Image (tube, rainbow, N blue to C red; front, top):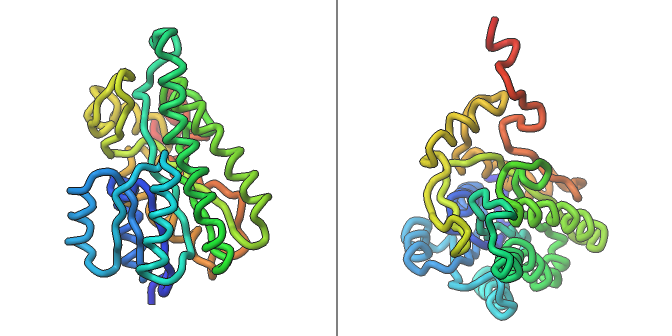
Amino acid sequence: MGWLDGQVALVTGGTGGIGSAIVRRYVEEGARVAVMARDPEQLQRLRDELGAAVVTVRGDVTSLDDNRRAVDTALAAFGRLDTFVGNAAVFDYFTRLERIAPEELETAFQRLFAVNVQGYLLGARCCIDALRETRGSMIFTLSNSAFYAGGGGILYVTAKHALVGMIRQLAYELAPDIRVNGVAPGATNTPMKSLEGLNARSVPLNRIPGFEQGAAQAVPLGRIAEPEDHAGHYVLLASRRDSGLTTATIIHSDGGWEIRSAGPRAHARS
């Protein structure tokens, strides 16, 4: 038996590195999954790989109608919804405030927050009724940037900090019917989409010169993460048996970033 036998999940951004790892792990653990993303070719590849265990929805998380359609698709295909995973996001590739032209700042802010914050809220709002029926859960992807400076630029870090408050407030508002939690990954070897005009690129972070070495040296566990390193946390938080009393909780999956040291660690010198 899998940890999630009989459960149904909706995952946004489900074709990206972490998103697709979540989808695959959920299916491995017995869940059926509705996957929402924008790229039709990537959605087709997931359908080809996972078969009848998944249904896909081509949509944009910034659209209320697309979020409603994703929930309706999950319910039509599988008859219920147990977990909503808000995962779609864009990155700003460490763009500092002073490097954003003043006349571009308002638009850049609105576009990034539309995906990274509003997209989560729209998905959550559309899922409430279905999740209340199953006493299900919401799980949101944050980042170590939700707690610390330096993990992105000003817009990304500000948006991720906002999500901490969102999770806590939703957990407060939706208890006792719906649990609301998050996972905060650290540096991960995955392509991250950025907004046009903000160092726009889509490359694995470890292909940025010096990034992988610097990220590995910055944390006690000494390596950059792969998407699969995070997927088990989403399984745990979706499990009623193992997380039935867990809400307003954010799991840090970052190699020990909070206890990082700027210099060599004592045990590494011995």
